[in-house]
Length: 392
Ligand code: FE
Ligand code: FE
Ligand code: ZN
Image (cartoon, rainbow, N blue to C red; front, side, top):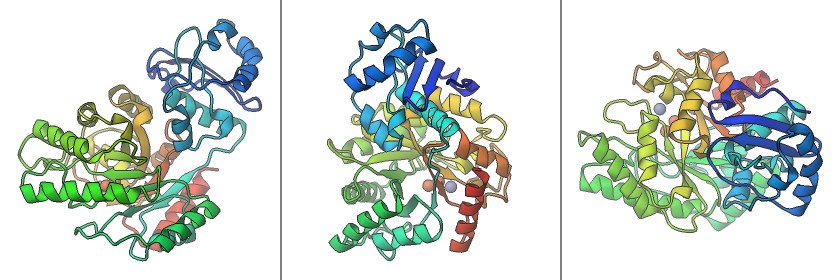
Protein backbone atom coordinates (compact mmCIF):
# COMPACT_ATOMS: atom_id res chain seq x y z
CA UNK A 1 0.00 0.00 0.00
CA UNK A 2 2.78 2.43 0.84
CA UNK A 3 5.70 3.42 -1.30
CA UNK A 4 9.22 4.53 -0.67
CA UNK A 5 9.47 8.14 0.35
CA UNK A 6 11.69 9.92 -2.16
CA UNK A 7 14.71 11.65 -0.68
CA UNK A 8 13.41 15.07 -1.68
CA UNK A 9 10.93 14.97 1.17
CA UNK A 10 13.51 14.38 3.86
CA UNK A 11 14.94 17.91 3.81
CA UNK A 12 11.35 19.16 3.81
CA UNK A 13 10.91 17.66 7.25
CA UNK A 14 8.59 14.92 6.09
CA UNK A 15 9.58 11.69 7.72
CA UNK A 16 6.86 9.25 6.96
CA UNK A 17 4.15 8.93 4.46
CA UNK A 18 1.55 6.36 3.81
CA UNK A 19 -0.82 6.37 0.87
CA UNK A 20 -3.71 4.20 -0.03
CA UNK A 21 -4.99 4.95 -3.48
CA UNK A 22 -8.25 3.08 -3.24
CA UNK A 23 -9.24 4.41 0.15
CA UNK A 24 -8.09 7.91 -0.61
CA UNK A 25 -5.91 8.04 2.44
CA UNK A 26 -2.80 10.06 2.86
CA UNK A 27 -0.73 10.13 6.01
CA UNK A 28 2.12 12.46 6.35
CA UNK A 29 4.37 13.53 9.14
CA UNK A 30 6.28 16.74 9.00
CA UNK A 31 8.46 18.40 11.56
CA UNK A 32 7.36 21.89 10.64
CA UNK A 33 5.08 24.10 8.59
CA UNK A 34 1.93 23.65 10.62
CA UNK A 35 -0.79 24.21 8.10
CA UNK A 36 -3.49 22.01 9.56
CA UNK A 37 -5.87 19.86 7.63
CA UNK A 38 -9.47 19.43 6.72
CA UNK A 39 -11.46 17.04 8.80
CA UNK A 40 -14.91 15.63 8.52
CA UNK A 41 -16.74 12.51 9.66
CA UNK A 42 -16.41 10.61 6.42
CA UNK A 43 -12.71 11.30 6.34
CA UNK A 44 -12.24 10.12 9.91
CA UNK A 45 -14.05 6.94 9.07
CA UNK A 46 -11.81 6.24 6.10
CA UNK A 47 -8.78 7.14 8.11
CA UNK A 48 -9.04 4.99 11.18
CA UNK A 49 -8.09 1.49 10.23
CA UNK A 50 -5.44 2.14 7.62
CA UNK A 51 -3.81 4.62 9.97
CA UNK A 52 -3.16 1.91 12.51
CA UNK A 53 -1.76 -0.32 9.84
CA UNK A 54 0.45 2.30 8.30
CA UNK A 55 1.84 3.79 11.48
CA UNK A 56 1.56 2.02 14.76
CA UNK A 57 2.53 5.21 16.51
CA UNK A 58 -0.41 7.09 15.04
CA UNK A 59 -3.41 6.34 17.22
CA UNK A 60 -6.77 7.44 15.89
CA UNK A 61 -7.26 9.66 18.92
CA UNK A 62 -4.51 11.92 17.72
CA UNK A 63 -5.87 12.01 14.25
CA UNK A 64 -9.25 13.16 15.43
CA UNK A 65 -7.99 16.21 17.17
CA UNK A 66 -7.59 18.37 14.13
CA UNK A 67 -9.41 21.40 12.93
CA UNK A 68 -10.12 22.55 9.43
CA UNK A 69 -7.34 24.81 8.22
CA UNK A 70 -7.86 28.09 6.49
CA UNK A 71 -7.06 27.65 2.85
CA UNK A 72 -6.80 23.86 2.72
CA UNK A 73 -9.64 23.39 0.30
CA UNK A 74 -8.44 26.36 -1.67
CA UNK A 75 -5.02 24.76 -1.94
CA UNK A 76 -6.50 21.49 -3.10
CA UNK A 77 -8.60 23.30 -5.70
CA UNK A 78 -5.74 25.43 -6.91
CA UNK A 79 -3.47 22.46 -7.32
CA UNK A 80 -6.09 20.39 -9.04
CA UNK A 81 -5.67 17.50 -6.67
CA UNK A 82 -8.04 14.64 -7.21
CA UNK A 83 -10.45 14.18 -4.29
CA UNK A 84 -8.65 11.10 -3.08
CA UNK A 85 -5.65 13.26 -2.33
CA UNK A 86 -7.59 15.88 -0.50
CA UNK A 87 -6.67 14.87 3.00
CA UNK A 88 -3.54 15.07 5.02
CA UNK A 89 -3.42 14.30 8.70
CA UNK A 90 -1.42 15.04 11.75
CA UNK A 91 0.34 12.18 13.34
CA UNK A 92 1.20 12.42 17.01
CA UNK A 93 0.85 16.15 17.12
CA UNK A 94 3.22 16.75 14.25
CA UNK A 95 1.31 18.61 11.60
CA UNK A 96 1.65 17.66 8.00
CA UNK A 97 2.68 20.26 5.51
CA UNK A 98 -0.39 20.34 3.39
CA UNK A 99 1.53 21.57 0.38
CA UNK A 100 4.17 18.92 0.52
CA UNK A 101 1.70 16.28 1.55
CA UNK A 102 -0.59 17.08 -1.30
CA UNK A 103 2.28 16.84 -3.72
CA UNK A 104 3.28 13.52 -2.22
CA UNK A 105 -0.27 12.54 -2.86
CA UNK A 106 -0.01 13.60 -6.46
CA UNK A 107 2.98 11.39 -6.81
CA UNK A 108 1.24 8.61 -4.95
CA UNK A 109 -1.73 9.01 -7.19
CA UNK A 110 0.38 8.93 -10.28
CA UNK A 111 2.23 5.87 -9.07
CA UNK A 112 -0.83 4.04 -7.86
CA UNK A 113 -3.37 5.19 -10.37
CA UNK A 114 -1.56 6.94 -13.17
CA UNK A 115 -3.95 9.88 -13.10
CA UNK A 116 -1.74 12.86 -12.35
CA UNK A 117 -2.71 15.45 -14.94
CA UNK A 118 0.18 16.97 -16.85
CA UNK A 119 -0.57 20.63 -17.53
CA UNK A 120 1.48 22.03 -20.36
CA UNK A 121 1.04 25.10 -22.50
CA UNK A 122 2.77 28.10 -23.97
CA UNK A 123 2.35 31.81 -24.52
CA UNK A 124 -0.72 32.56 -26.63
CA UNK A 125 -1.43 35.85 -28.35
CA UNK A 126 -4.33 37.71 -26.79
CA UNK A 127 -4.94 39.75 -29.93
CA UNK A 128 -8.09 37.81 -30.86
CA UNK A 129 -9.64 37.83 -27.40
CA UNK A 130 -10.22 35.15 -24.77
CA UNK A 131 -12.14 32.52 -26.74
CA UNK A 132 -9.55 32.64 -29.49
CA UNK A 133 -6.81 32.02 -26.93
CA UNK A 134 -8.49 28.89 -25.60
CA UNK A 135 -9.02 27.55 -29.11
CA UNK A 136 -5.44 28.33 -30.08
CA UNK A 137 -4.14 26.56 -26.98
CA UNK A 138 -6.21 23.49 -27.77
CA UNK A 139 -5.00 23.45 -31.36
CA UNK A 140 -1.42 23.30 -30.08
CA UNK A 141 -2.16 20.41 -27.73
CA UNK A 142 -2.00 22.68 -24.67
CA UNK A 143 -4.25 22.37 -21.63
CA UNK A 144 -3.02 25.52 -19.90
CA UNK A 145 -1.51 28.72 -21.30
CA UNK A 146 0.00 32.09 -20.65
CA UNK A 147 -0.94 35.42 -22.18
CA UNK A 148 0.00 39.04 -21.83
CA UNK A 149 -2.67 41.06 -20.10
CA UNK A 150 -1.77 43.99 -22.35
CA UNK A 151 0.78 44.78 -25.01
CA UNK A 152 4.02 43.39 -23.52
CA UNK A 153 6.03 46.38 -24.71
CA UNK A 154 3.38 49.03 -24.38
CA UNK A 155 0.61 49.87 -22.01
CA UNK A 156 -2.84 49.62 -23.50
CA UNK A 157 -5.32 46.90 -22.57
CA UNK A 158 -8.36 46.05 -24.65
CA UNK A 159 -11.71 46.12 -22.88
CA UNK A 160 -13.04 42.64 -22.06
CA UNK A 161 -16.17 41.74 -24.00
CA UNK A 162 -18.93 40.00 -22.09
CA UNK A 163 -19.80 37.53 -24.84
CA UNK A 164 -16.14 36.66 -25.37
CA UNK A 165 -15.41 35.95 -21.71
CA UNK A 166 -18.59 33.86 -21.36
CA UNK A 167 -17.68 31.80 -24.42
CA UNK A 168 -14.14 31.46 -23.08
CA UNK A 169 -15.30 30.02 -19.77
CA UNK A 170 -17.53 27.53 -21.57
CA UNK A 171 -14.70 26.50 -23.88
CA UNK A 172 -12.24 26.05 -20.99
CA UNK A 173 -14.75 23.90 -19.12
CA UNK A 174 -15.27 21.79 -22.21
CA UNK A 175 -11.56 21.47 -22.99
CA UNK A 176 -10.41 20.94 -19.40
CA UNK A 177 -8.34 24.14 -19.25
CA UNK A 178 -8.25 25.08 -15.56
CA UNK A 179 -5.07 27.13 -15.16
CA UNK A 180 -4.20 30.48 -16.68
CA UNK A 181 -0.82 32.02 -16.03
CA UNK A 182 -1.11 35.56 -17.29
CA UNK A 183 1.99 37.70 -17.62
CA UNK A 184 2.38 41.38 -16.77
CA UNK A 185 3.90 43.58 -19.49
CA UNK A 186 7.70 43.80 -19.58
CA UNK A 187 7.43 47.55 -19.22
CA UNK A 188 5.94 47.12 -15.77
CA UNK A 189 8.82 47.73 -13.37
CA UNK A 190 7.58 47.44 -9.78
CA UNK A 191 10.72 49.07 -8.40
CA UNK A 192 11.25 51.82 -10.93
CA UNK A 193 13.17 54.96 -9.98
CA UNK A 194 11.36 57.39 -12.30
CA UNK A 195 7.95 58.55 -11.07
CA UNK A 196 6.20 58.05 -14.44
CA UNK A 197 7.47 54.47 -14.70
CA UNK A 198 6.40 53.76 -11.14
CA UNK A 199 2.99 55.25 -11.80
CA UNK A 200 2.55 53.09 -14.91
CA UNK A 201 3.44 50.01 -12.84
CA UNK A 202 0.83 50.88 -10.24
CA UNK A 203 -1.84 51.65 -12.81
CA UNK A 204 -1.20 48.62 -15.01
CA UNK A 205 -0.86 46.19 -12.08
CA UNK A 206 -4.04 47.45 -10.46
CA UNK A 207 -6.00 47.41 -13.70
CA UNK A 208 -4.72 43.93 -14.58
CA UNK A 209 -5.85 42.59 -11.21
CA UNK A 210 -9.33 43.94 -11.88
CA UNK A 211 -9.33 42.26 -15.29
CA UNK A 212 -8.07 39.00 -13.80
CA UNK A 213 -11.19 38.84 -11.63
CA UNK A 214 -13.07 38.05 -14.85
CA UNK A 215 -11.17 34.74 -14.82
CA UNK A 216 -11.35 34.08 -11.07
CA UNK A 217 -8.81 32.04 -9.14
CA UNK A 218 -5.98 32.28 -11.67
CA UNK A 219 -2.38 33.51 -11.68
CA UNK A 220 -0.80 36.84 -12.55
CA UNK A 221 2.93 36.48 -13.10
CA UNK A 222 5.23 39.50 -12.98
CA UNK A 223 8.93 40.27 -12.92
CA UNK A 224 9.98 41.75 -9.58
CA UNK A 225 11.73 44.39 -11.64
CA UNK A 226 15.06 46.14 -11.94
CA UNK A 227 16.24 48.48 -9.22
CA UNK A 228 18.18 50.50 -11.83
CA UNK A 229 20.96 51.49 -9.46
CA UNK A 230 18.86 52.18 -6.39
CA UNK A 231 20.20 49.01 -4.77
CA UNK A 232 18.62 45.65 -4.07
CA UNK A 233 17.21 46.69 -0.68
CA UNK A 234 15.40 49.72 -2.08
CA UNK A 235 14.14 47.51 -4.90
CA UNK A 236 12.71 44.98 -2.45
CA UNK A 237 11.03 47.72 -0.40
CA UNK A 238 9.48 49.31 -3.50
CA UNK A 239 8.18 46.01 -4.89
CA UNK A 240 6.55 45.16 -1.56
CA UNK A 241 5.15 48.68 -1.30
CA UNK A 242 3.56 48.34 -4.73
CA UNK A 243 2.02 45.01 -3.78
CA UNK A 244 0.66 46.58 -0.62
CA UNK A 245 -1.07 49.19 -2.78
CA UNK A 246 -2.50 46.96 -5.52
CA UNK A 247 -3.49 43.76 -3.69
CA UNK A 248 -6.97 43.93 -2.22
CA UNK A 249 -8.90 41.83 0.28
CA UNK A 250 -11.16 39.29 -1.37
CA UNK A 251 -9.22 39.11 -4.61
CA UNK A 252 -9.16 35.62 -6.11
CA UNK A 253 -6.02 35.97 -8.22
CA UNK A 254 -2.66 34.84 -6.90
CA UNK A 255 0.14 37.14 -8.05
CA UNK A 256 3.37 35.31 -8.83
CA UNK A 257 6.82 36.77 -8.39
CA UNK A 258 8.98 35.27 -11.12
CA UNK A 259 12.41 33.89 -10.28
CA UNK A 260 14.90 35.92 -12.33
CA UNK A 261 18.32 35.36 -13.87
CA UNK A 262 19.91 38.18 -11.88
CA UNK A 263 20.83 40.06 -15.05
CA UNK A 264 21.89 43.68 -14.58
CA UNK A 265 20.03 45.20 -11.64
CA UNK A 266 17.24 42.62 -11.67
CA UNK A 267 15.68 41.78 -8.33
CA UNK A 268 14.68 38.12 -7.82
CA UNK A 269 17.85 36.27 -8.85
CA UNK A 270 18.06 34.76 -5.36
CA UNK A 271 15.26 32.98 -3.55
CA UNK A 272 16.11 35.08 -0.50
CA UNK A 273 15.12 38.25 -2.36
CA UNK A 274 11.70 36.86 -3.20
CA UNK A 275 11.30 35.81 0.43
CA UNK A 276 12.19 39.33 1.56
CA UNK A 277 9.52 40.80 -0.71
CA UNK A 278 6.85 38.37 0.49
CA UNK A 279 7.78 39.07 4.12
CA UNK A 280 6.91 42.73 3.60
CA UNK A 281 3.50 42.13 2.03
CA UNK A 282 0.35 42.43 4.11
CA UNK A 283 -1.95 40.17 2.05
CA UNK A 284 0.58 37.35 1.72
CA UNK A 285 -2.05 34.75 0.95
CA UNK A 286 -2.38 36.30 -2.51
CA UNK A 287 1.34 36.10 -3.30
CA UNK A 288 3.17 33.13 -4.80
CA UNK A 289 6.14 32.36 -7.02
CA UNK A 290 6.63 31.19 -10.59
CA UNK A 291 9.86 29.28 -11.19
CA UNK A 292 11.49 29.93 -14.58
CA UNK A 293 13.90 27.12 -15.42
CA UNK A 294 16.07 29.28 -17.69
CA UNK A 295 16.21 32.04 -15.10
CA UNK A 296 17.08 29.90 -12.07
CA UNK A 297 19.71 28.07 -14.13
CA UNK A 298 21.23 31.36 -15.24
CA UNK A 299 21.01 32.59 -11.65
CA UNK A 300 23.21 29.67 -10.58
CA UNK A 301 20.73 27.06 -9.34
CA UNK A 302 21.76 23.74 -10.90
CA UNK A 303 18.42 22.18 -11.74
CA UNK A 304 20.16 19.67 -14.02
CA UNK A 305 22.72 18.35 -11.55
CA UNK A 306 20.78 18.73 -8.31
CA UNK A 307 17.06 19.35 -8.81
CA UNK A 308 16.21 17.92 -5.39
CA UNK A 309 18.73 20.24 -3.78
CA UNK A 310 17.39 23.31 -5.58
CA UNK A 311 13.82 22.50 -4.61
CA UNK A 312 14.81 21.80 -1.02
CA UNK A 313 16.52 25.20 -1.02
CA UNK A 314 13.40 26.79 -2.48
CA UNK A 315 11.34 25.14 0.24
CA UNK A 316 13.71 26.21 3.00
CA UNK A 317 13.83 29.85 1.86
CA UNK A 318 10.39 30.48 0.35
CA UNK A 319 8.28 27.37 0.94
CA UNK A 320 7.14 25.03 -1.82
CA UNK A 321 3.52 25.84 -0.98
CA UNK A 322 4.12 29.25 -2.59
CA UNK A 323 5.20 27.72 -5.90
CA UNK A 324 2.26 27.79 -8.31
CA UNK A 325 3.68 27.67 -11.83
CA UNK A 326 6.79 26.81 -13.83
CA UNK A 327 8.13 28.57 -16.94
CA UNK A 328 9.80 25.74 -18.84
CA UNK A 329 12.65 27.06 -20.96
CA UNK A 330 16.13 26.01 -21.92
CA UNK A 331 19.02 28.44 -21.64
CA UNK A 332 21.56 29.55 -24.21
CA UNK A 333 24.15 29.97 -21.46
CA UNK A 334 25.76 27.92 -18.69
CA UNK A 335 24.49 27.76 -15.13
CA UNK A 336 25.31 30.96 -13.26
CA UNK A 337 25.81 33.10 -16.36
CA UNK A 338 23.16 35.71 -15.35
CA UNK A 339 22.23 36.22 -19.00
CA UNK A 340 18.53 35.29 -19.49
CA UNK A 341 18.53 34.04 -23.07
CA UNK A 342 15.81 31.45 -23.62
CA UNK A 343 16.24 28.63 -26.12
CA UNK A 344 14.17 25.71 -27.34
CA UNK A 345 13.81 22.81 -24.92
CA UNK A 346 16.10 20.46 -26.83
CA UNK A 347 18.61 23.08 -27.85
CA UNK A 348 20.38 24.67 -24.90
CA UNK A 349 22.80 24.27 -22.03
CA UNK A 350 20.29 22.46 -19.81
CA UNK A 351 20.20 18.79 -20.83
CA UNK A 352 16.70 18.17 -22.26
CA UNK A 353 16.21 15.12 -20.02
CA UNK A 354 16.75 17.40 -17.01
CA UNK A 355 13.81 19.55 -18.17
CA UNK A 356 11.69 16.42 -18.47
CA UNK A 357 12.65 15.54 -14.90
CA UNK A 358 11.43 18.99 -13.83
CA UNK A 359 7.98 18.20 -15.24
CA UNK A 360 7.92 14.87 -13.40
CA UNK A 361 9.25 15.88 -10.02
CA UNK A 362 6.71 15.14 -7.30
CA UNK A 363 7.01 18.65 -5.89
CA UNK A 364 6.20 20.15 -9.29
CA UNK A 365 4.19 17.63 -11.29
CA UNK A 366 0.81 19.15 -10.44
CA UNK A 367 1.78 22.68 -11.49
CA UNK A 368 1.08 24.31 -14.85
CA UNK A 369 4.17 24.31 -17.10
CA UNK A 370 4.44 27.20 -19.55
CA UNK A 371 6.83 27.25 -22.50
CA UNK A 372 8.49 30.59 -23.26
CA UNK A 373 10.82 29.14 -25.83
CA UNK A 374 11.59 30.98 -29.08
CA UNK A 375 9.07 29.15 -31.26
CA UNK A 376 6.28 29.74 -33.71
CA UNK A 377 3.03 27.85 -33.12
CA UNK A 378 4.27 24.77 -34.96
CA UNK A 379 7.38 24.73 -32.77
CA UNK A 380 5.30 25.01 -29.61
CA UNK A 381 3.05 22.16 -30.74
CA UNK A 382 6.15 20.02 -31.33
CA UNK A 383 7.62 20.76 -27.90
CA UNK A 384 4.27 20.06 -26.23
CA UNK A 385 3.97 16.75 -28.08
CA UNK A 386 7.56 15.85 -27.18
CA UNK A 387 6.91 16.53 -23.49
CA UNK A 388 3.69 14.54 -23.53
CA UNK A 389 5.55 11.61 -25.11
CA UNK A 390 8.31 11.95 -22.50
CA UNK A 391 5.76 11.55 -19.68
CA UNK A 392 5.06 7.96 -20.64
FE1 FE B 1 8.62 36.40 -17.41
FE1 FE C 1 9.66 33.39 -17.55
ZN1 ZN D 1 13.50 35.22 -19.38
